[in-house]
Amino acid sequence: MSPISGAAAPETHGSRSTGAVSDPVAEPPAAADVTAERVVVLDYGGQYSQLIARRVRECGVFSELLPHHVGAAEVARRRPRGVILSGGPASVYAEGAPPLQRELLELGVPVLGICYGMQLLALALGGRVEGAETGEFGRSELAVSRPGRLLAGTPAQQACWMSHRDTVYEPPPGFDALASSTASPVAAFESTDRDIYGIQFHPEVVHTPYGQRVLSNFLTDICGCEGGWSAASVIEQQIELIRAQVGDGRAICGLSGGVDSSVAALLVHRAIGDRLTCVFVDHGLMRKNEGDQVVAAFRDHFRVPLIAVDASDRFLAALRGVTDPERKRKVIGAEFIRVFEEQAARLDDVRFLVQGTLYSDVIESGGGTGTATIKSHHNVGGLPEDLDFELVEPLRALFKDEVREVGAQLGLPERLVWRQPFPGPGLAIRIVGGEATRERLDLLREADAILQEEIRAAGLYRELWQSFCVLPDIRTVGVQGDERTYGSVIAIRAVTSDDAMTADWARLPYDLLERIASRMIGEIRAVGRVVLDITSKPPGTIEWE
Image (tube, rainbow, N blue to C red; front, top):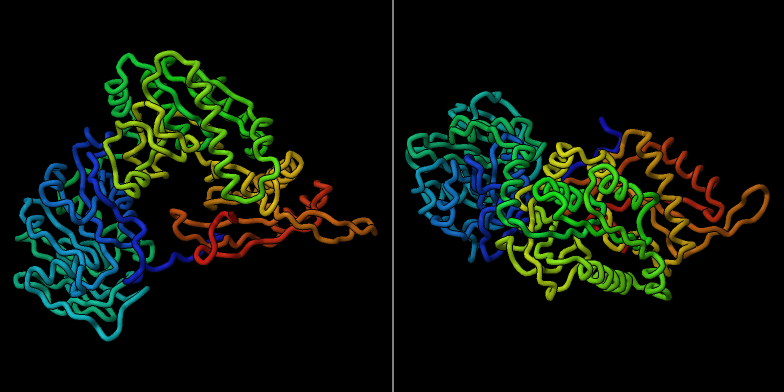
């Protein structure tokens, strides 16, 4: 077992959706336009809706997550091989609960309902669904009475993950009950004649050991998908799409050094060559040597035209006297805009702006056409609406882990491919309660460099969602060499997560923590104490500010 493993939080009915899609419905993501096989996942507000889409992709089938209310015609326009109805927090009997559009069952493709999706199918087709006195949440035991097509290849007794209160007591007429669970008389059913299937448990979570086999059965054996899709397979497709969009035009990319903007820049450069110019603004708030690594990768290794702007003095001057975290963000964002505008104005005839927008961004923002006047976006520091560029978003069909896969295929250095998330305002917001002075930034940079070096040496860097140091504006008394000291405090923050919506504090080994603290206090004269943050999210957040 990993020394830093943590349990995932279960989905509970009544919780707020973390992956809902809002209007308007977007065009299919560009990378998917040339994808022969796809499955549509309809989101009924479930906590795991995005995870269902990701698990489908892991089976080699492209998936698209759409809001439940888009309509059968919109789904049919995607020409899917199958449709999956997600879970959700509502009761099927609740006023205003998302309904099932019966036209979805007439598209001529298989339909799979999961949790709330299964209950919708049962209720609409004449089964019996009732609210149980006792809900079923967390681990449960599944007893398979007959595997049918959906549960083929799974054992008669198996563990699964449940999260529901309404329960299916009888399947619809003409449907076969396949399994029961601790508190669910009908935990799975199917009608092969109608190509409609339902499961009460969540196959997409790791707590359901045979869940991926169930999804594979649906995708391969039932929907007839061949499973040849991968994130890397979209590289050549995207290159052609970029060339078609940009033509003989020129593009600019605000390069942050993060994996999203880096991979987007490499894809566009491969498509249009030196007609792409990247602008990297070093605001003096990055971690140790990160600016040099970005410049070396893009200018020296990939030969991408790059304008590197050392604006550290300018940013620090703007931050003088600023201690409030929100004010820091606004100052940094405004200064970034001014620097970017100055550099863009020096380039002739640039019509396109490259952004590392991901599919999760598309889902959470409600979509868009992908070709519009520039909107504020975190990848380029929050640029204003009056910058008149046409967007090029080559990653808008991919999740973060898929972007890393593409980056590795493109030859992006390992340190950039696997770079942990880093806030746009950089180290300025990790100096808590105090001004971001050069002295404090250098102190925090050195402490963070020690942390990252030891985390990597322990082989734990990829297991962590984030690991970083925080410098509170406090001093603490200590003793070093028989002398009283009054030094700064460094807080270590390390968390595990799948998507940053929830996070657990990482159980780092004690000997590693001891080594980190010893090095920080021994090598950085100004550090007098090292502490560990063991707050999960919720109730805390990952960043302190």
